[in-house]
Amino acid sequence: MARIGILGVGTIAEAVVRAMCARPGNSDEFILSPRSASRSTRLAEEFDNCRRVESNQAVVDAADIVVLSMRPQELDEALDGLTFREDQVIASFIAALPPSQVAELTAPATRACQLIPLPAIEMHKGPLVICPAIPEVLEAFNGLGDLVVLDDESRIRVLSCASAIMSTYYEAQNRVIGWIADQGIAPETASLYIRSELEGLAAVGKSTPEDRRDDLPAEHQTPGGLNERVRAGLLEQGWFDALIGQIDGIYRNAVLRRPDAD
Picture 1: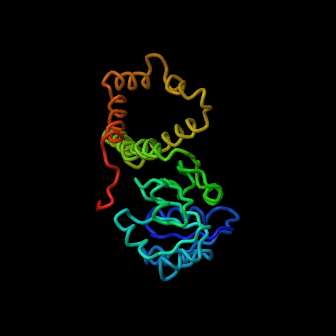
Picture 2: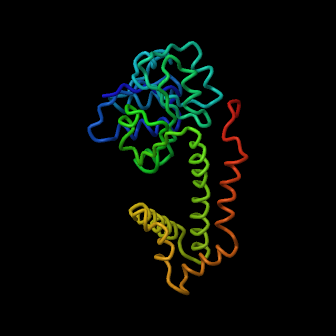
Picture 3: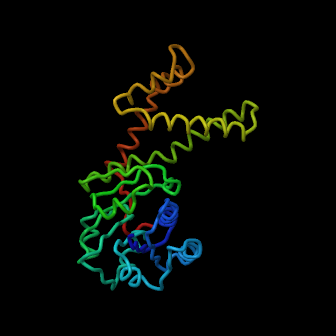
């Protein structure tokens, strides 16, 4: 059993706690900070192994693993005056704040790692980046999805930028659903068809051995068929190159999040 303290109970933190509490045989204890009041109160009322305490210091005092889940601009205020223990592990959800900098802020608790949980974690789906690999954190967060472990904190930015395809994915999904509806099919039927198709494609992609991954496009089209024509047209228009160009652009130029950002 781990005692996991959550400093900053926002949307992602709530999803993570719900996912962890829903695991079979879960015996971890969650100590929740008073902010956000509504989320921490709701979780404490819903789960027997969650309890809300009255201060951030009370969270730190009770925890073996301290999760930092506040917004970057709230970090200084949240940590102000807090006293950590040398034996504690720090797990940070804060973007653009590498583990080495986290360790400086939480000393003498210098065993720190960064986690990147995505929204699907509540359903135990999707990747969960952890850098570096701290055994207690790997054990505590196991079973929430696919643990993707990095040892070099300079590479976290690569995966953070690559995850920026989420809204693009849903935009493409909704455009195709809209096109089907424009042809006279009920929107709910169009939505069920496309979302089920995408779920099936994701399942096939996930289960395909890595050495066959490059074969998937050809395996899902026939010469001269509809799939080949759509893909060939997008290739000719440079659609996929443009997608990678956008990701490369934010990797090279964009500031992921400023400490003073809204």
